[in-house]
Image (cartoon, rainbow, N blue to C red; front, top):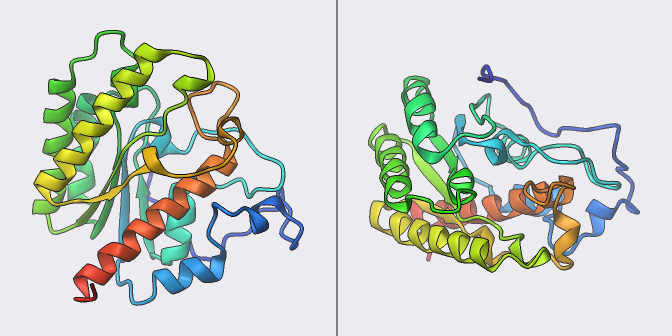
Length: 238
């Protein structure tokens, strides 16, 4: 379990180039810092909590030319939140996330929550997606009822890289369920499954399960754009 951490933007990391020639600075699928700040102008979130598995925790290989920062750390930095709690833990199913993290997160009183879970469920050859749906719905509803804005995620699908059609079908079913559940409960969706990223292999770590730092940069951009849509809705701008 990770303790609360405070992050103040901008975050700089000496392991990655910060010059205009940096791969991150010219990646067409990654927002520039000024773009992210513009999209988030007017955001008033102060307490950002992240729940989920290793994708929430920020597991991923370093990538030459990209800052070594998880998507959640990037989003926290761009928001400039004074309080940031990441409870992400490897190997947890959605049910375990609900059991182990939900009440702790609510007790921390966040006003913005990101929930990314379900990936470990579909690694099972015969997943119980009804159980996954119940767990995710409990997380979405409980955090919404606490007064927080909530971001849900579909998952990117690496199955085509190694030709696993059965895994592709399981991930597709999970993503379809998450889209419908997010709409039903009324949470914001970062639809990573339809996110463009160019060369598919270039966003994954060596294990082909977790995004590398390029992948994390792209996920952060997707989250920021989803938050910008939420802001426009809250501000009555359509």
